[in-house]
Image 1 (cartoon, helix red, strand yellow):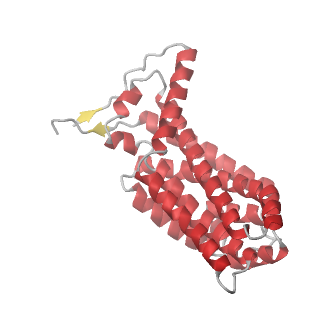
Image 2: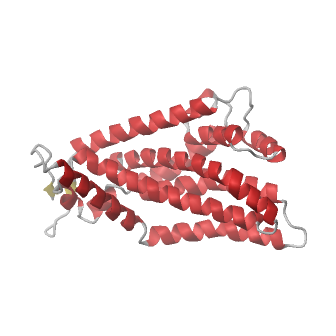
Image 3: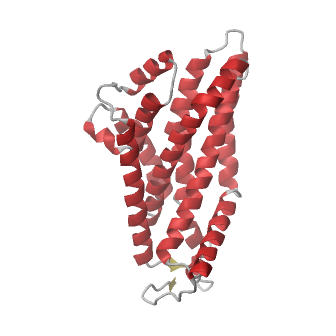
Amino acid sequence: MSTIATEHPILRRSRGSELSAMWALFTLTFRQHLHGRRLLVLGLLYLLPCGLAVMLRLIPRPAPMDHLELALLLILLPHGLAPLTALLYAAGIIRDEVEEQTLTYLLLRSIPRWAIYIVKLAATVCVSTVLVAIAATALYIAIYYQSPSALTEVLQNRLPRVIAVFSLAQMAYCVLFGFMGLITRRSLISGIAYIVLIEGFLASIDFVARQLTVVYYVRTLILRWIDLPENILRSAEREWGLKPETMPTVETCLTRLLIFCLVGTVLAAWWFSRREFRLKTPGD
């Protein structure tokens, strides 16, 4: 086994060369995420609720559009598919480079080690956010396509806020799963367990500990900030066990999530800059 040493200082070039190298790493990571089986698997998973929505609207007694919006777009997407997307991409930010034996080439670039992690994380957040935004748009179209006036109102008013909330959630999930990928080799198993037990189970218990979950703030932002119809709003409050008088404000949700993202990113970047990674060599 060969060890990547960390005690030798990295030779620095000019600031312009460093920024150029960061941009090249960002675009390379972005392109890498758009290829491979992960995107295919996620694409198929995102097509399932869209197909289900179309099918339930075409049956003789169509399902109400507001019920489909609540079940597929406000529950299934942010509670299942969106965190899974972040997990599949963010958990492998560094682990994939180690497995493919390409981490050495990254460390030889004129970029500080901490910056390598941050740049790759930023590209991962962008890809994850774009995929979820496309999925949300497709779901709204699949649900409301038979009602052009309702579809126009939804796309103009609700969709931008839904995408904003989901984007903030994707940032937090990518930070969380990116750090998880650094500290454990079984990051996918640990991540799925976290999504089910913490984000799924703990967040649904009316207890102070659920304020430690990402989905709690996502639910609160959906209820407080997105202009939902009254029937969807009340159904969501009952489904999630939330009361308007006890929910934090929009500003509080944004502040806590952004602080978590900042602290988590700094901690993970520091961890990556201090760690040694053992890579397989042809002789191993």
